[in-house]
Length: 409
Image (cartoon, rainbow, N blue to C red; front, side, top):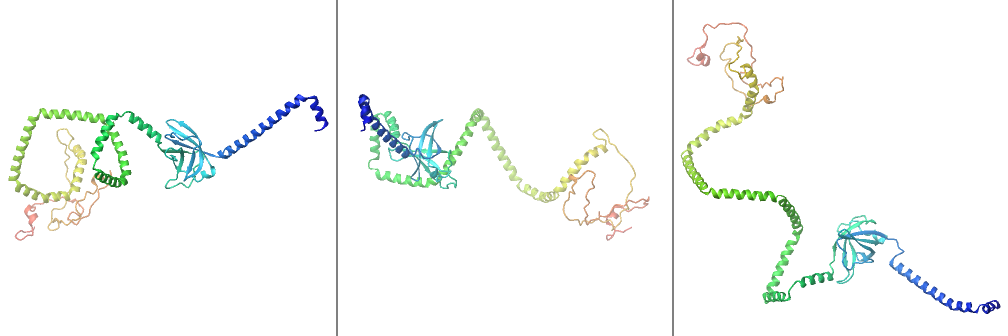
């Protein structure tokens, strides 16, 4: 200690004594603060406060009783982040997750989420589950994933069981258990066999559960349809009730009608029995004519259609619908008289009936001419010379001239 310090202490002894005491306290406070800062930094580094994170949201029906902030987020057993916050959202719960950006790339975009517990009474954690067909793209920051599966806690089960047991009377429960014990006594083997058969039945039913679910969904739709038409169905039932009452009131008339129907059936049976052979003969005779009509049905339809289209012209020619008729009389040029054998009829046409488009004729167009091997193929050439037949042939000679015993003129 130099002379200057000694002189200062000599002049300010109280100040130097106070500084000696305070200096130790300040040093102790600085040391404690340094330790606190180091501990805080260590805890922050352990909690990952200085690490960059990616935020992902999970929407769940509930979070459970033991899911708190800082809960772990895992995938395939590897911790990839933590739960930053648990917030209510409408009637559901929304979890805000802070995940490691590097590990987030390993989570597929279509990953499933459920909330599990580590042990029976342990805390819950968020578990990402890779689907059967994972997406090649990874989950993006800010994505919202829906979680439909939340493990039920045992304390929740105990709470529900306590609620049920609070409403059960011990005496009645004892009587029920005693009756159940008496019923199952000495029947353990039968009960085991029943459970084994039930297990086999359920194994057979298990592959059909998806179809059963679809059937139940379809049943719900059908039930909705019936619910929408319930009013009409009830009115139908009311109408059926009225109809049933009418039938009940007219039971005697209905019995009489049925008796008359039975009598008519007996009479009809007798008539048909007596006329069985004539009816069969009539049907057999009608068959050729019906076959011919069936063959010429296109031409018959054309004839009827043509007559219907010509009727307005015919009505105009004959005066329409007024009484009387209108005629236009004149002398027409005729053809040569019948000559044998040149004018003999020839029936050698083939091809069946033909309509020639009479019902689809374009106005102003000429009708189609069908060439056939008949005597009608020659064009009509009218005779322009006036001729008087003093001794014309008879009809008999026209038809039978040239046959044995019939002279030809």
